[in-house]
Amino acid sequence: MEKDFNSLIDSGDVLFMMLGAVMVFAMHGGFAFLEVGTVRKKNQVNALVKILVDFAISTLIYFFIGYAIAYGIFMYQPAKVLLADNQGYDLTHFFFLLTFAAAIPAIISGGIAERAKFWTQAFAAAIFVGIAYPLYEGMVWGQITFLGQEDSWLANLTGGVPFHDYAGSVVVHSFGGWIALTAVIVMGPRFGRWDSQGRSRPIPISNVPFMALGSWMLCTGWFGFNVMSAGTLQGISGLVAINSLFAMAGGVIAALLISKNDPGFIHNGALAGLVAICAGSDKVHPLGALVIGALAGIIFVKGFTWEQEKLKIDDVLGVWPLHGISGAWGGIACGIFGQEALGGMGQVSLLAQVIGTSFAIGIALAFGFTVYIVLDKTVGIRLEKEDEQRGSDLAIHNIESYPEDVTSRF
Image (cartoon, rainbow, N blue to C red):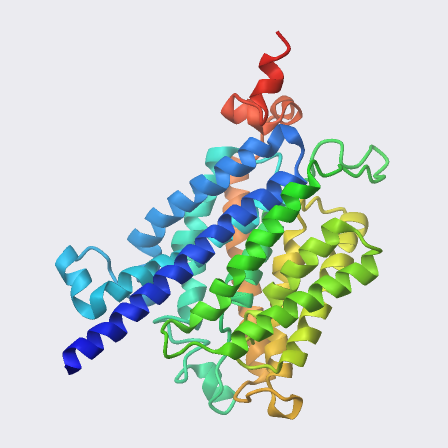
C-alpha cells in the first residue's frame, strides 16, 4: 500500500512538472508573436523561425552541457536508469528548466530583431544556453554553492539568508535582458532609425493584434512559469498565483496611466509586472506584488523612452527595460517587500538581493560583450545593408510573410 501511495505521489509530481513545462513552452509562442507584431512585415517570418530554431538548439545544448553544469545531473545514462527514480521526474524537471533556459535567446531575439544574421545568432544562443546561463543558474538554484544556497558565502555574510529568486526575475529575465543589451550595442541601430543629424525616425510596429496575442500567450503561460516553480504538488502555493495576478494588474494599470492609453506599453506593462514578481512571488503580500508590478510597468514605459530617445539604443522590443531592468528591480524588490514588516513572509535579505542581482548583471555583461564582439570581429553578426533593407524574410528564408500577396500580382 505504501509503495502504491508513493508511486501515486511520484506520478502526480511528474504530471505537475510536465504541465508546467508545456505551459512555459507555450510562452515561446508568445515571444514569437510579440516580435511578429512589433517588427515590420518583411521580418515576420524570421521572428517565427528563429525562436523555434533557438528552442530546438537550446534543447540539445542544455541536454548535453547546460543541465550538467547547473545541477551536476548527466543525461547520458540508459533510459531504464533515467526512469527508475521517481518515475522519470528528473526528465520532466529537465524539460521544465529547459523552457527557462531557452527564454534567454528568445529575449535577445526581440532586442536585435530585423538585422541579425541567423546562424551567427544561433551560435551565440548556444553559448549562452550551454555555458553562461547554466553558470549563473547553478549559483542560485543548482550545484554551484555561491549565491542561493544556505551554506553559501553570501548566506554567511547576511546571517544565514541567501539570495532568493523563486521563479527567475533575475536568473532568467534580468540575465537575458542584460545580454540582449550587449548585443544591441555591438550590433548598432537599424538603418534609418535615426537620420544623419541624430534625429529620431521611429519605425512603426506592423500588427497590434499579433503583438497583443503574444502578450496574452505570455501572461497565460506565466502562471505555469511561477506557480509550477514549486517543483512538486506538495510545494504548490496559492500565494504565488495571486501575487502573479496582482503584479500583472499593477503593470497594466501603471502603463495605461502614464502612457496615455498606448496599446504597446499596456500589453508590455503586463509583462513587466510579471517579470518583476517572479523572484518574490512566494514571499510578498499581494498588495506588495501590486506595487512591485506597478513600478515595473513604470520602469518599462520610462525606460523604453529613455533608451530610445536619450541613449539612442535601438532595442526593438525594449527587452532591456522589460527584462533586464524590471527583472533586476524584481530581485531587489523581493528583499524589500518580502520583509515581515511589510506583510511578507520574511527570511529575505535586501543586501543578499542586491549582491545576487549585481552578480547576474556583471556575468551577463561580461559574457555578452565577449561573445558578440568576438563574433562581430570574426564572422560578423549583422546582415548586409542590402539584405536588411530587403528584409530578413527574403534575405534568409526566401519567402515573405504573406506569399499569396506576391503570387496574386501575376
